[in-house]
Length: 400
Image (cartoon, rainbow, N blue to C red; front, side):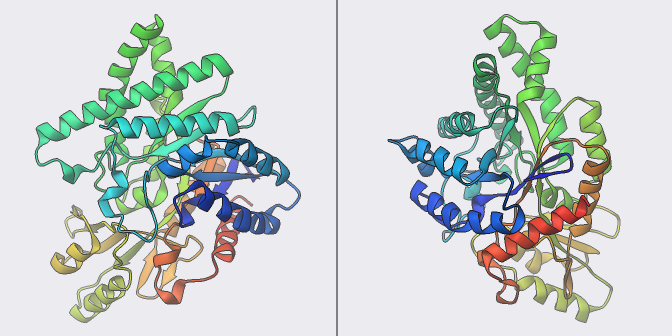
């Protein structure tokens, strides 16, 4: 649905199941209910997540035409997709495998190209379309700087291969499609600063060179094409975990001409400690309630000297950290809640980013991404459709 300065939806990675039959069943039985509460008489966009298997199946037989007909009949459209998790995302142990296969592989290229083929056929005229994706790879898969650097270069080359496809689609159809790189803790790109440095030091030089050679164009035109088709996915949860200064990052992106393809509206867990052992133990016990085995829940602890200590998963922080001033943990909690008792959410970060978007829009794609409904502590669980409706209503209120 449209809000001030953008299209607002939720990501369908909330639904279990990895086949196209699973995905379509969930949409038919959930999306219509959600839409009827939010915008029954107008169009509403979908943030579509397709597993690799589902993306293959959607292009078989008459599946895509049937989906198009369903979209038209339900006043729905697809403008953004989540191409980060390739395989199983629910009811399996995901952890670091959410990055697999990474951008060093042919499998990741093929999957992403297939998603763009689908999006190009679903996207309405006059709207740009984006697909969010992994921040190249997972940094702990590389045990030294040389291996990490080689992986980053290989991943960058593969992303440029997809960039070439996106430019060719733009030439042939006029459709503007962009790949939105999503930094997250412990990714090969994990902060806004690392993304900007990679974009300017790795992506632009390689991309400009390849485009000039392939299309016989000027360096200026090649730079414009890179910046048009490779964007940042601004996941607010991920940036909040790293205590990143939103205004500064967004202004720098704008100054450098780097686009934000999508805001993923999401909240992390946080807690501020005091000096008493009993309070620290109680806060640790509260975090323990969120220690579940499906997803990585990285923790970034702020120390008394202002430094940041990173932990690859919540159990490591619970085991080792004894003197931090604050924790922020990667657990996509409901965005309409700020207070979890001894714990809080980073909802204030969402308000800050949406305030910037309201005053000076920097993207037109907004997607709520709370995918942890199934693994929340029992006290926080609620019917899924009602929860999604409440989240989207809360976001709409921020634009009122």
